[in-house]
Image 1 (cartoon, helix red, strand yellow):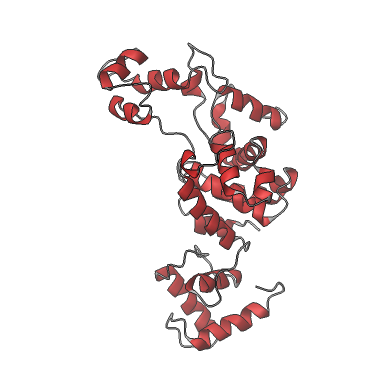
Image 2 (cartoon, rainbow, N blue to C red):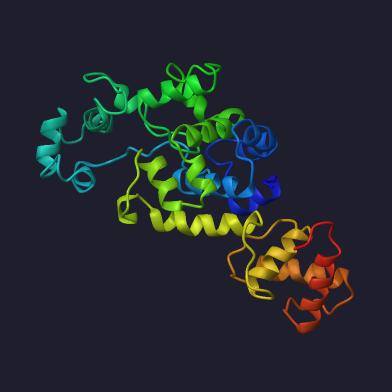
Length: 296
């Protein structure tokens, strides 16, 4: 189950771009996941892993389009041969304060429902948990939401804390990711959300390695996977299940926060609070987990 405690551990700076995001996502989670048929923690883990990468754990809710002409040539080498060529093709000049707008209008124009010779490209840049991009996709997302949000005229509504989870999950479902998530097909989910079609080569998906790492963390955080017994990751997961507050990221890095949480557990159970994973501490963790209503 996705909770605010888990979210704050996994996305420690998640409120920075959209104030109140984490509390709103946690409050909406049960309803939104149910309404869009994300009926298992495996589905949720896949969705959250994609959002984890797409929006930078809540820090990058709007696509960064602050390119220089030189960087534009690196990102789109088939379009621009050098900085001068880039400036000429987008109708700009050195020092132009509107370069980034002209560039994105040029690069994104005529794609994803963006109308040529308009500012659709720079208006409908990536936003939200899923980084929905393109006028056509904003229109489709609004329709998926029952036209309750005017995303065409107010695209920033995608980023609002009150809308973020539903917009992200609706886009995830709209892209065809849900059946692939049910099959635990990370490449399929990643390709459909990132590219809009299936691929066989992970290198074709932007940030696939990061998506793989994020999915592993989210599976551990949500209890979809269990780490090896008595490993450092297992201790972190066990402490989270026993109510560690703040919750721990189950990454196997047993640093200060993990040691503090373990010391608190040890003190509460009459053990020497040294933060060490001693046999007695591990045995006490086992007993505490066994006493929970749900088996670890």
